[in-house]
Length: 458
Image (cartoon, rainbow, N blue to C red; front, side, top):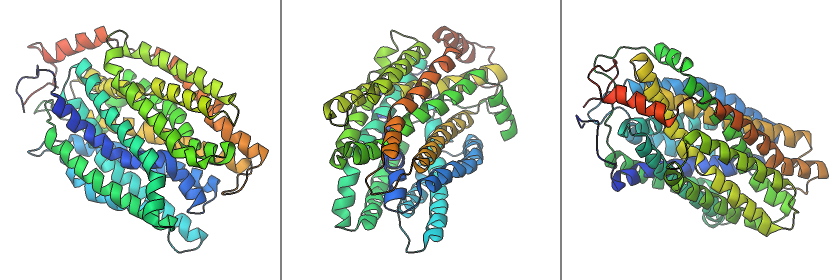
């Protein structure tokens, strides 16, 4: 590692290598976000309420696995660093879990539900094993706040670019690879995505470098790390924010397939609609470093979530035959949500610095693991809400929906996400780490002789 933390601006190649890791992750995450719910109901044959309940209950395991993974990664010591080795160790479990999750066993309804629980839990554990260290890697590549914003922008350009490919190509690949057998098509598609993800994770491992580490004499337990998090006000606010915003994103992402299949009656447009949204997200992520030159991260996010609220309400009034307006509003929502991920994950890295400044201890992976749990819990709560509402309104898979069921799908696509986007604004108002505050913290952490216990070293 470099003994001097005051490194030059990160090279383009390292940013690109780091971004490859989120392209890889989105071969899984975007499939879950867009297709998994409708796969379980319309292909696997599960009741929507059972799917929602399953996705929520499995998050209870993540309540333990994410922070445990964070504690493990923070205490890993290898010649390649703390976090990078997991990008290699986690490849095989993730590939296997992806294929098994999208495998339909030839068993009864109860057997299918047990299979779904088991494989989905396996999938989430495998995702945690590789993605928590990947996220934590952001916090140790550089300490510069603007550089972190740039790095996270690259990361989420990669995420949304990979997500765009997944959203558009998945239905086509399932049809092409399955050759009339939809269940086989899903298996072969996930095998292909697994091979592509493996190559990309190797590129991230080879192309990045860990530069920030705790003090060599730092002593702390996982319980101390959790206690530090519970007393870290900026992190607690971000945790709440991630939970709320993921409700907005996950509800809209999952329901979009239902919206076009059952309300618009244009199932052929699902891929194009998702692609337009993902490209807008990618562009929003790309311009984030430019936007942060003119506006504080907190204020920028407040304006963006306000815009998402207004646009989502407007979406409610779009007639079912006005395809052009649907695409326009979806693109505008994507542009507004695109900067969210780069901003929030850059802010998480800032809260790790804040914790080190306040306590003298650094636990980067714990910060990001609990952040990942907030995201997954938000997605699970969204799935539970979708499942409960569709079941209560009489949703029947692969059938013409009743007026109540169709209206429920519209509400899930529009007004319900708008409510969560609106709640995010006052939550952001409470976030205390301004740019000036961060400059003061970094000055004390990295530029003075009298440093706290946690510091930057080789």
